[in-house]
Length: 80
Length: 159
Image (cartoon, rainbow over all chains, first blue to last red; front, side):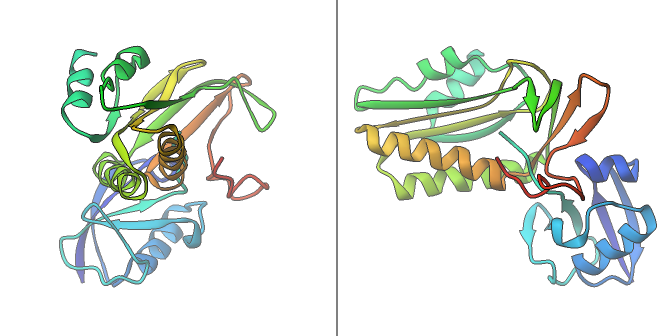
């Protein structure tokens, strides 16, 4: 089991109703964790529309998560 | 505004997220450089309509820690690709009304070609890569996170 800190922004923040939470999970990668959270909280964005960042750096969807990591799922961006 | 001018003046490149109003005149003035033969600036404004829907206001939200890093990478890429003297970009966050300045890019170079090309490169890459999100508030009272629709043909649009 990993203890992870998840932060939410924009549409995910609204759908989760939180800006951050700490959770324990068996998910080993961002893809698996997102699927878990999406099922639990009914996120509308499918996994292939969301990028992941760990400890404030972009990572591959299949990167291995480590205990204590801070993870952010990034919805499609729309700056400018 | 004074603080922004100093920041821009001290470094040859900077990317910043700002929660306060941007003053394009002050930002442009801070680009002054006797070596520069060209200065190109871009201002992105809050428009009153998107995809046929009348827009009342916009809300921008940033993942600031990563936005700063990705923004800095884009500016470094611009410096590597084009012969520039300076390149800066500032993006607003928070609630913005129609006509407000949402993003400002300022580039100086010896010659206009590099300045135009780099300015275009920076705004295009910033829109596509920097983790900033836009929520539109429409006159009918509804809202939408742009590019986050799961139906409709504008879901993947990055204009």
